Image (cartoon, rainbow, N blue to C red; front, side, top):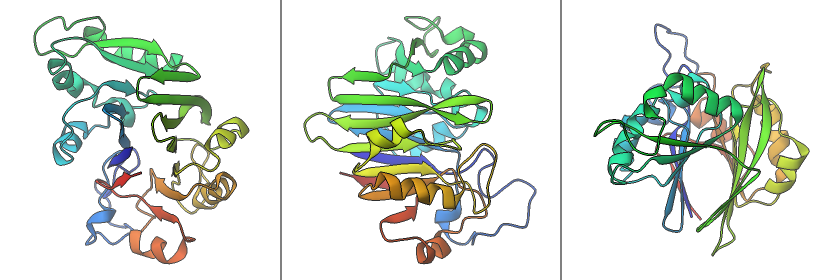
Length: 259
């Protein structure tokens, strides 16, 4: 089982456009962050979670060869804007639609933004095609399962996800873009091999977990390793490496974790 961090930044990315007050060291490449998404490999199955505006480049940089399933955590622009570039992965499926799972909010947003891509096959050769499905509480796949939990993110809910590989039993919990993690999600994630969690900045935020709040969740979950994602220019990689407890670190674009 493997997780690839395609992007680890906020909706603005880092460095921020037209801004010269970054609090992270931009000479450190780990502090250059595209918008947040991950790629999960379970057995022979590849699952893409979200498609940032930089999705095409993220796939090129990380040499992503195929996608079997796509999960959209929510319909905000920094997670959906790259979905048109899924067209290449539809080509590699001989034009068959890519299964796309999301919440009612996410499915509705895909329909609004990509009406030309909804169907069992592309309208024209080279177009994307999405087979939209509501994400169930438990998605059973040949390689394992993915449990989903609604987590609050301002006025909407996002999908919190727990991946469990069938043959190894390894688990990855992925909680991005949320300001709380429910007791049910914590219980399913408890003792996971890997926790990836939203940790926007040191101070509280109305729609995201702050670093202290993420640390509290991490302590409760007790995963073997924890990585922070969706972080702002306030979060410097080297400084946080000195300050965070053992087993917890800030993720960076291109980081690969193999379990």
